[in-house]
Image 1 (cartoon, rainbow, N blue to C red):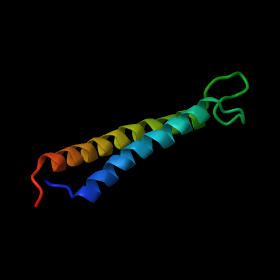
Image 2 (image 1 turned 180 degrees about the vertical axis):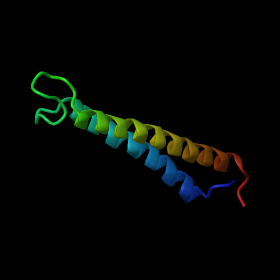
Image 3 (image 1 turned 60 degrees about the vertical axis):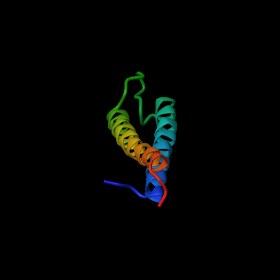
Image 4 (image 1 turned 180 degrees about the horizontal axis):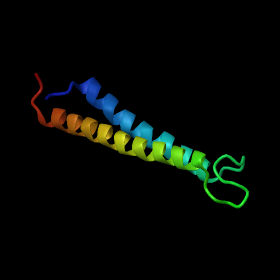
Length: 82
């Protein structure tokens, strides 16, 4: 399958954006002071585990989408222009 230049760049940008957003989210989750992510004893709550799972899945999907976009951009640079 051949991806167009705009689609390839969009997928690559989406992968980078996904990493940026979710790394920031995990940092904020880890430093949560509101009592949602950690209870009074400092143990992780269900909120923490659910959101950490969401972040991990998003990291994996963002990485996969970004790799597809990167391969598309790389393939377009190798192909002769029409």
